[in-house]
Length: 355
Ligand SMILES: Cc1cc2nc3c(=O)[nH]c(=O)nc-3n(C[C@H](O)[C@H](O)[C@H](O)COP(=O)(O)O)c2cc1C
Image (cartoon, rainbow, N blue to C red; front, side, top):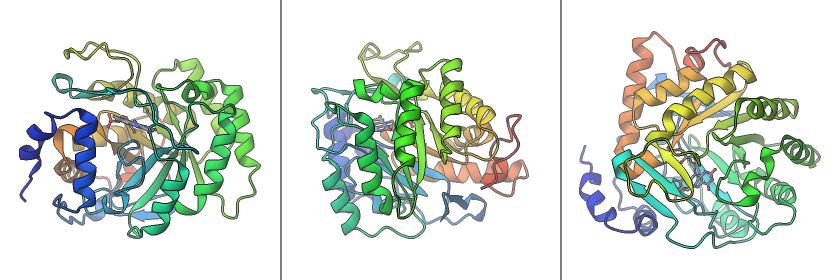
């Protein structure tokens, strides 16, 4: 299959990363990006919060913040997509430049600070578009940077977006805003979850928390305990990191969250730890530095029932999604697994997750 990305990439990578992203979104909207082969491999079929998906590979939050192209992502190979982060009011985010490519490291640093068009704009798009039945949808929720009551922002967003998604993500791990870090305090997190539990849902959505890789084991234990106590439906591991493992790029010292290859080991180890702490039944989504089927498989064996990626696309384009799926299918077969659910957690002491 013809892959145009090796030709498009030099052009895109001459642009500022955010401009390149804007061009990419426009190309996706205009439907001029060739779709990926419609592979059907039953071994990859899986269920995510009640929705049957063709595969467990998702587009991570931050790529389609305003819901401009989510309905097309099945065509580009994904089994599910997470739109957002969305905040109640529109916000501009931090001053530019705020996104940096680190090609020597297969990484990106961003300190965007949730620029987005706000809840009304996203809701308008969710209402206007039809997504295919086999494309899962998550909505990533965040509080406004100037909000006096970040928990109230989450409650308002959750009530508003519940009808549209298979799951809602509480982004309690953004390293780029003060409010993004507020819920690293387990008491505040417990209070937020209690306020969400008090919503009179017509239909309660699946609620998922996205964790930061920058917390130590004792805080992780306390946060997971609070989440389990509140009957959270899933956990996403992990957001970008403020840590700086050794990097080659001259942008290494830029402030912000690091994603891509250097995040893989830390986020996968953390995932295995969360599986251990949360037990076998909780849905875990593994994200951080995935660039191959072997990486996706490692996350699944560490406990994930689905995976997501973003930074890998910056360097590999959407053909990477097809490569990941094909390799993952081959690895599952090699090891005698009937499917993703059976392999989930097989590499840890916890028994496989039952979906
Ligand atoms: C430019 C950029 C913007 C992002 N925006 C968000 C966001 O709004 N909400 C969120 O939860 N994560 C956001 N993320 C984090 C990703 O969803 C993901 O957790 C992280 O990048 C690790 O995955 P990766 O190594 O495959 O990129 C963003 C990442 C990048 C690179």
